Each structure stands twice: as structure tokens, then as C-alpha cells.
Length: 59
Length: 134
Image (cartoon, rainbow over all chains, first blue to last red; front, side):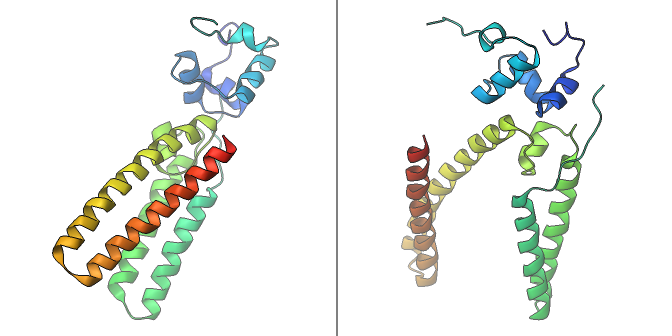
């Protein structure tokens, strides 16, 4: 989604007010964002949170 | 391409550096050159460690070590790190209290038991705060 928008991890991080490492950790599944950040990311791409984030073994 | 920006020095670091500098000045006034030198050098070395981590492209481990958190992940990582430090401090304080009791030295015993007591109180207060907020 980020790459499709032509954004680097650093520029997306700048746009969201987080570090490049946080974007990398989110993309590699090493960090689960807060609800606030998840909503900010979804809004940035004009999507819903469910479209951006997926839960394994969805309940 | 993201542009490098610089964040402000954190409140925790201002308090840390201010305390070290104030301690160094007080030691100098009291004509304690060793204390003044130690505290002054610690303040300068701390500042040297903090400055590179003000950059927006600083490494996450550097920011967390320098108490220059940029976002929620930095704060989450720092909390996890500090929780390990707290557990280690409690365990080591118990070891220290046992060593102090064995030594029979009154001043050592008072200092060791006071440290253990204060840490235990902080632990209890911290737990009640996080449980109430959680």
C-alpha cells in the first residue's frame, strides 16, 4: 500500500509523525500499533482499519 | 526522500542534565573537585550521547537509550526496557540487603534496607497507578 503510493518508509513516517523504524516494524509485523495510530494510518490511505490491518486467526 | 529534522531535548533529559550540572556546581562551591569533575564529566558525556539522537533519522535503539522518544513505539520499547531494569533493581536490592545484614555494618544496613523499602513502595504505587489506568 505504501509502495503503491510511491512513499518511502521515512516519508510515510514523517507524514504520520512516527519514525522510519516504526513503519518498518509495522510492515514486518514486529509492532502492533495503538488504535489511534492504526486509525491515522488507515485515514492516510483513505481506507478503513480493517482494510489495512489483518488479524491472524480472525475471531 | 524524507528530510532530516531535529527534535527538542526531552524533559527527562533536561532534568537529568540540570541535576548533574547543579550537583557539579554545588561540589565546586563546596571545594570538592572530585565530585565536581565526576558530575561535570557525566553531564558532558550525557549531552554528547543525547545530541545525535535528536535527529529524526537517529536509530531507534539510540533514541530509547538517550530518552529521546519520537513516537509511541519508542515509548513502548522504553517501558519494556525499564520494567526489566525495575525487576533487576528489586532483585539486586534484596541481594544487597542480605549482604548488608550479614556484614553487620549499621550504615550499610540502613542504606540497603532504605533502598529496598523505597523501591518496594515505588513498586506498589506504580502498580496501583497502572491498574487504575488499565
